[in-house]
Length: 259
Image (tube, rainbow, N blue to C red; front, top):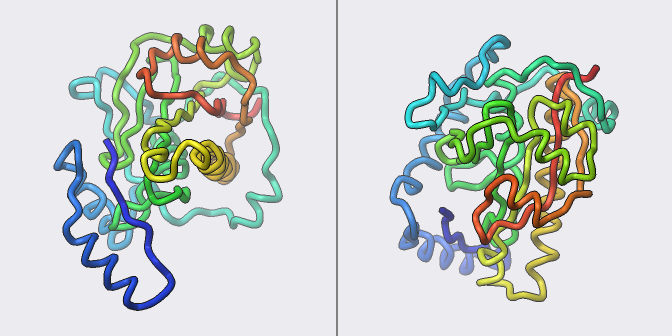
C-alpha cells in the first residue's frame, strides 16, 4: 500500500515547477485513505503537542477494534540530545521482563518509518521516496504489522512466537528475552520498478540501515536497550512470521529495558 512519489529535482526552478505539476495529478494506487492520512498526520505533528507517554499503558488485544490497535501520537521533542544518544548507544543483549508501553512502542515505530512531512515523507530516507520497507513487531500478544499512515498495529498472527523466532535466528538469547523484536522486511518490486534489478539491492540495504539506526538511537533516548541482528535463516523467519510472499526479511532488532 504505497504511494508513487516523484524525486524532487534540484537542478533548476523549472524542474521544481515541473515536479509540482506532476505531483498535483498523482494518485494513490491501492487505497484512497492514503491521500489524506499523510497530510493530517503532518499537520498534527507540526501544529499540536503530542501526548505524553503512559508508562503503564500496554498493547492490549482486548482494547483493539477488529484487531487493529491505534497507537499514541509520537513526540517530536525529547529530553536527550542527538549527541548524547550517539555517545550512549551500545548493543544491549540482556533485557528485563518489563514490557514496553504503547507510547514507547509508538515512538520506536515512528523513528523507524513514521510520517514526518505533510507530503508523506518518512523518518528514514528512501530512494525515490518509494518506501519498500515493511515493519513488523513480535510480542507476547502476537505478530503485528505497522501502518505508518494510520499509526496503527494490525494483528497478523496471534500468539507468542518469540521462541519460534529465537530458534530460527541461531538461538540468540536477546530475541527470547526482549519483550519486543522489530522485524524489517522489504518488497523489492517497489524499488525495482523504477531503478531496476542492479541498483535496487543497494538502495534497499542502505535504507534499512538508515531506519535501523533511527530505532537504535530512539531506544537510547527512551532509556531502552536494543541490538541489531542480521544472523537468521531467511526462509524460516519468513515462515514463522507468516510473511507475505513478496516480503524479504532483512533485520531483527530486539528491544527492551536493559537488565
